[in-house]
Image (tube, rainbow, N blue to C red; front, side, top):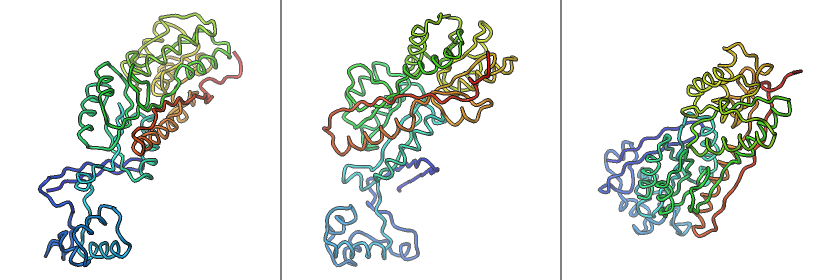
Length: 370
């Protein structure tokens, strides 16, 4: 028995097929005629007056004359025959599915990426299959092993952590893969990444230009790709502006979520009094904004707050949060296009794309006077 489950939303179609090899490569439509007498490939051929091979070619999208194509399609429609995509993929070696693996499907950055990737691959005739791997690299490794068995035609992967074991799997994989984020050493894959170092420089320069000197930093886990890159960018930006580094003004949240940000921001404000807080993403920035406001600090007069990713949430906050746009949708579109190119041209040269950031200034850093 074939089992098909589909979850559809405005942005992403997630499709799971389970196929038994004993089945016919086609699914019979549920109508009275089909219930009374199941159609077979032979019956379609007889109805169309062509060979079984001709029917197979037409239904699998292979070349056939216009007359034969019309007769086969008409016969299949009359008999209620619908090609089964899963069975077809076993024959032609393609699933017509592309996998996207992200750490957290609730993060608005990943939602934006999913929307953009879905639009690109759908136009190219593919379904998007979503996998939420969490932050554990083991889950990403398991996913790679499974995908190498042919569950999808290609993978777009955005890993939070890239240990050596994941790098080994990526190097060994013969599966078309595009990485959104930094590549592990020795891995030659198509890759799209943001310039987090330049993004942090935009944030620090912005508040320093206002005369703010005690610039604190709320980060996510520093053992992650974005956590390490954004901390490095923060320290580099402080040095470039001649601002003093205070280790007490740096805190690390347990993850990149709002809840984790509340705890991290509370710890920060217990041990220092910054006049600006730069955060590794918008969820952490909203948490810092709320903790500061509850503590009686005025934003931006007492403390300016800057986020990163420039999501809709930053604009919806009160006050709206200044944020660095790291080009999430641009990265997603570029990654999808690179994967489609790789599927069409398996031996094409590897491409690595860097998306430059830009700053969106909002009320959380604007003030009339010191």
